[in-house]
Length: 602
Image (spheres, rainbow, N blue to C red):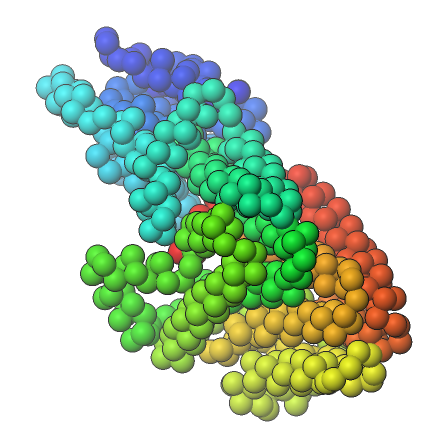
């Protein structure tokens, strides 16, 4: 139970007590500053507490934004301040200062809550102040000002503001114009019935899995049903985020579920399409795996670039300036958002193509569209990186090292190459990573299944991978290292499985890549949630990217094609078991601060 300390008796006609109780607060009235400090000390340290001026006039949603958002230890709006357990000590210290002689600061502010916020600012404490827009939040000084504030409250429909703010400010064309106009009302319906974003996220996953099952039937009716259900799943996927914003139900677990389930839904649907095609006599498993690899590598490009520049200083770029200028022209904004094929456009395209064409055509169009989008976005980011003058931090370098997913072999060799790597030019890390990947894929693509060439390529790949990460990844293009590693590891699995030419090899490869991709996505979401990278033992247990690559090539060299298929299946199950158990354990019990993931970049 949260506690609100009301400083003084509410003025006649005020709804402040009822508003606070509707937000889940137990209201206690303080006669003066000393009484407020006493009441504050009585509230258990693990509970949220708020100090609210009894003369507060404003919208209920302004109070909700200021006093219930779980993402911030300290937050404030005019006339009210709140602290969660992490910010409790700072709030208590500021309150004590206000209760001492002189209050510690000479501030002409009558509201105790506002004086506390001023004291917190004086201490250099970070206090979140939500954007209120047209919402009213004030502590009027006299009856006339109070009447004016109440008239301003009546003039603005806070429920309309709440519904509008539930929708992401930046989204794709399909989501903005074809889903959000009605999904926000579904979110409100869910909120009024006590449903949580995580429940809606789970419903979206179940719907997508049913869609994949329908696609796996291989019938035209099944394909039509699959397309309809995939769109329904996407509507629910939009709804969960809108519900989180509408009701301020944010959590690290929720952000992880939302992002992880998006990938699980899409890749399960690819598998459903491949199974459906097989029922009709068409083998498209290679296309399905290729689509998953391409989409995952696209995401890794996004993640690596964003982490590399998350806190870069002197971050200027003529290319970025041109991009911002284009964003000021309405039609270019939507064209640029559509051509990168964000999740809304992509799922809508997949759904329509599933319903009216064949799985093979669906995958062909998907691969072409994603390849164009990947080329466009990656080229733009390369240009930005080459033209911006930025100094990247140790945090960014560590994030890229974590995303690289180097195992014991690469880490051990990196120590040997450390001095040599320091003398290489700035472009060396991505160039060496790319060269190693090309050698690996080139040798693995040699005619015939098995043989030593793929193993030789894997050894070369392990050495170049170690050299690429032997020094901190702070170069202009070092964010390309993790995507190059992903493309090489996933690509060699696809090549070797396709060359096996036995039933089950490509589905097994699909499962292995899916399991490894889950580990890589999980790494991203831990970093995004400021929860740190996966534990070192986990990376060692599953070998790192270079260790898994070497193992797969050795298996292809020493086993027959049918045995290789079985080995891939066993490896997929083993990797999935380890990473899933550790990931679920972490996210359920981490206690990380609440966050909200805005989803796949548009």
